[in-house]
Image 1 (cartoon, rainbow, N blue to C red):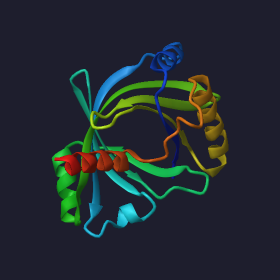
Image 2 (cartoon, rainbow, N blue to C red):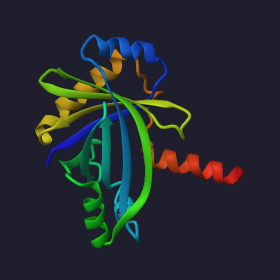
Image 3 (cartoon, rainbow, N blue to C red):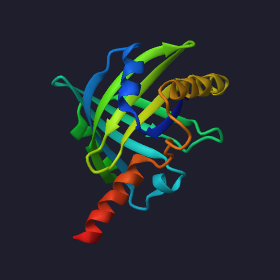
Length: 191
């Protein structure tokens, strides 16, 4: 199973990041509408952040639909991931509902995505903004084909993070789901 090797960090210097990325690739601006699903007993969430997501990506009026499962993280932080395109989001959600899996959280991300090769790996760097969160984020991702490929994938991710000026203090291991939940809880607390 392919393994996602990814680091998410707060953006401190967007201009520096965009300059470096722009010298390697053209950014593609998209809107990601993400809905995460789980069983009533939250067994996926309790399984070390396993995720089941339906995503609608809108780019220049074109829509692409993806169904993604991320398993529990491995010891090195990589996450086994399976992803496929979906022809009809409502039908996919209906199938999940028939299996007892229902939406647990949904949010929208405004994204600019850059894709380019480094040392034989395809790198995906996404600049992300979720309106409910106080920070913008950058995600640097490489899909490793197998366990033997993960070490090289981590080296590539670390190289890109260093090149765009991300430091250890910028890295945020908290998943977007937890960040959005906390932001929504804070708003409810003051209402």
